[in-house]
Image (cartoon, rainbow, N blue to C red; front, side):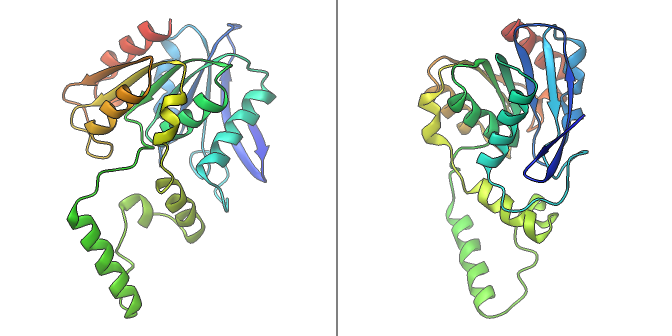
Length: 238
């Protein structure tokens, strides 16, 4: 199924098992709804999976979106489907969206699962600032700067690069104390994209939260340790 939002077609799959609470899965940057689809066979509740544009089967050409546009899009889809009570399961970028939704929809959300979630202001070393300084100098001198940026950034077109920059520069640390939903924070111990100090900050700042660190797992801990992840989420949600 698709939904039209701000001129973009949003692809989604809704498995309606007639339960009062719906599990809403929010995938990471560069992925699509299929990354979490394996959970559908193991959880009893109704489930909603979607593709954030420009990924998966959703529209590729979007402009001027922010992280709050993505959150508003999910709220609009929930309204269209008449979903009034839900759990949120968000990985990385999807965790950013889930954090916002957990605050804006505090009366509708039951439980929150943050999986290797992004959204917090990162710690920066002196080497990071030296790299920024070198970039600015080269740009001012008219030198080649096309190789600067993460692999995610370099893979994007000009419009999506603006959106990506807006997203990674929007820090959600101040949202955490306002999350009232019972929260499970799951991180891989070897996560280099969202390091463990972020996991510990989620645990510290979200009042009703539990932190689980999966051994021998990285940024995609739910893939690296699938059975362990499924058991955790199943016990937490059901």
